[in-house]
Length: 250
Ligand SMILES: Nc1ncnc2c1ncn2[C@@H]1O[C@H](COP(=O)(O)OP(=O)(O)OP(=O)(O)O)[C@@H](O)[C@H]1O
Image 1: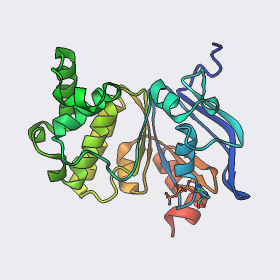
Image 2: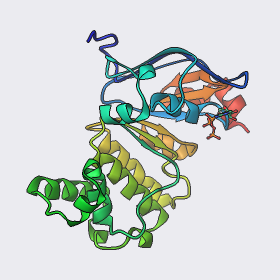
Image 3: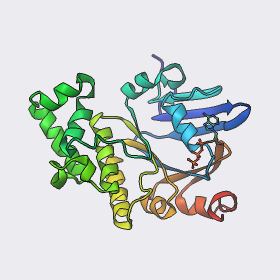
Image 4: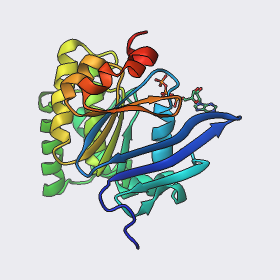
């Protein structure tokens, strides 16, 4: 296969999609470098969710190019193919298995393709056990491993779900509003967690919490009406008069 966009893990160019004549995404271009973490901000209806839907194959663009890891044309693949390529998505609302323990939730994600029964009752290999340990440590839930997921705080459920995403070993993580509803302490810890994850993964994080986005310290893209309104360092984007007008100043 020809490598079309070798410098990027994610490459969107000239992407548009309309719903009933309304352009939710309008000539959107965005490039993520391998290993980069990018924060996406923008007002309600700016197209952030629709952009994620296009990347994951849930929505097909009307026009434009979408490439993953330089060579995979995502507009030609379905959601399962795209997930299997290594793009993991976390929605805003945590969807953990409440009646299973924290550890089993991770095990279920690790062995997703082998079926639930095997994940819970088969003997774990040493490498699976090590991987589960590593993920529990990363998402700071070692102490809660034997507790039912239902007993976790909202913030801890979000971390567990991030752990479940890591278990699938994605190259690129798409994370939607991770700190909505979190306490300040949980928000700060989530920033640490994402920075740690970004050392070995590419990450796109959509978030409205500007304090959190600033603390992440990564390049920011502000979407508005389906296009990039402003892009760059947090200080540059947050001081951009157009961003202040449509988003921050409201
Ligand atoms: N399936 C759909 N059918 C019709 N309109 C849609 C569909 N999906 C999104 N839209 C519209 O497209 C626009 C962009 O929506 P989108 O959810 O992507 O914005 P967003 O930036 O994620 O907003 P928020 O911050 O509120 O989550 C909105 O006007 C929305 O109503």
